[in-house]
Length: 227
Length: 206
Image 1 (cartoon, each protein chain N blue to C red):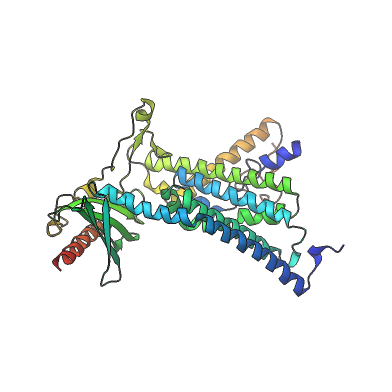
Image 2: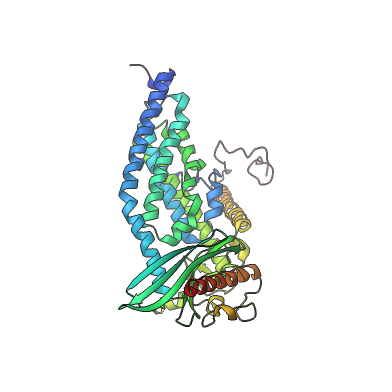
């Protein structure tokens, strides 16, 4: 049971696609200018991620290795088209318009293809479902956190509700450069929490193994504990 | 049984890809069929909702498509109430916005004075150009906490509201509200409303 829970929760914190794996940066920066868009984008990606993980896990036995990437892309783009059509029909028009080109571009979102290649093509149905849901939830969460911060600082609102702290915000945070700035601070904050937690337990924070921190000395990930 | 994943014959590769594409096409076709009607309905109701925002009470509307000399398409809406003319509106666009195209619906009263403007689509800079084109209802935290209801009707916009009650000839950078820092957006909006007034004049002259 614990291993099932682990597959789900790893996407939320330990291997969060945006904040740890640094995947899917393009939609993150573009659609997190306000909280509602960020949430909608996260949910749309989660739906595609879960569905494509399920189907790819299902067909993993018949897909030849040589053409697996085109097969995965076809599956993913099918679900993206389905999502796009449904959102066009039923999502609030303002949100559909705001997501614009980034909705069809979920097809080439590296999180979706990454999970298909790294997880769903090697694991069973249920585990793939959990992995997709966890990764999608982590993506949504990261996006929404960045979206809330950017919207609050740039317009003084959260989910379009005016917080009455200030009338004129920092407009730059609502635009692309502001996306980088806020994302940087969120990343730093998350690493800070991780390092502190590890220190408290007397251990040293180890980033995920595929994350090569050992050649960089900007923070103390790569340093040895001589203190 | 051989492992299908290790197969590499061109026939099997094509067959597998064909199978997956066929299934994908079926799923997409089914969804398109399912959502075709709601999408069409929604686009229709969007136009109607915008017309309701800018025009006084009406029960029937006729639309006339007008192709401009510069390739922009405009639509003239003539609304009627109980068989009598109730109002007119022009949907047109300009390419002069800071982010390119701005499309808006401008309604006029019987004396061809601007009645109300609603911007349908734009690509202006958030926080700067949007101050010229966006009507945004602001819901405040204290209002929600005190249980005050949301305001009904069209949210105000100082720049767009400054056009109201003026004829096309009266519109200039001196008479309407220009937002400082957003001169290009303001100019584009002025251009758009003038264009709408010109289209109306031309249509009524023949």
